[in-house]
Length: 434
Picture 1: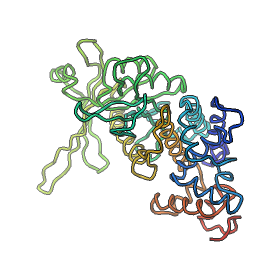
Picture 2 (picture 1 turned 180 degrees about the horizontal axis):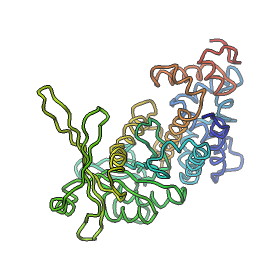
Picture 3 (picture 1 turned 180 degrees about the vertical axis):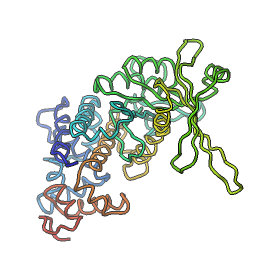
């Protein structure tokens, strides 16, 4: 699979900047930095995982009359730290970012790179989960949530995040998140389930014909969410908890389940049981399909240890042929936590770093700038032959980004691909010697 020009770093960067350039600017006409430049500079910081990037580029500009922000990210004037925080705070998140996520996704579709993510023909697994990325006992804004206890409350920012995943594929494809925040004109606290209802409406407008299976934890296994998903002609797989799904548990005790035997990833016997068309909630009469599984792990004494996998509901028909695929999809729920949130929090992206809280949209916009950088990196790893070659030359991903930051901060390059070639040992690039 060859890299298409529309998926190159420059093409993706330009697509993001087209959206940034369309953000309404209420400032004076003689402002020194355009919103496009400011957002691009913020995006560059997140792309290189470096909050100190701007200072290094200012020093390079003073010394050499050129800098990598201009050559790699087409930033005409480097904004001040205060300026970048104030402007990013004022930018409307939906206007700036939603078109970018949609465009990136469509470009992956056009390049046929998404086809490998299909769980069933024409159906993709959309994992959803909530996460908290900023908290403080003192600093807050009008969109902050108040969490904790009455004696020890704190302010925080949270999102409901979605990502296309596939068991066995390491890369995940994030989509536009939904902010969990204090809603204008409402007294009730916002929550993950309400955010998911809004998320589904907006996601379907962006991807009106995409076949999706929404995959989430037991929190979402409710009548309103299931009805919303089915309203949008999508499917679901949700984990269940006995305490919250008592009608289902009671009904399961009186029926006979179908059973099939498979082989687990550890080459052990895998037992899958299911029952189609069973009442989930007595109060609403909602019906669903049920699946559970466990693995038999041989022990030294010759006996088998039972490792229970879990219980799920789905509106996909479970059969002997589909059971293993549905089970693998259900168990891939952890991928949004491990491959997405864990990377954003613990692998260089500093999603919980306080870049500036702001009064309007700063926290959420910095989250999206970081998520957008992460998304572009995922696309590189999926589609860019040069980047994949560079990645394979490094053992740890953190080592690669440490080297990228070091050279970006100290040497000038005519473009990002030139830096990649330089790191691969191509000393014929125009970069000056170290």
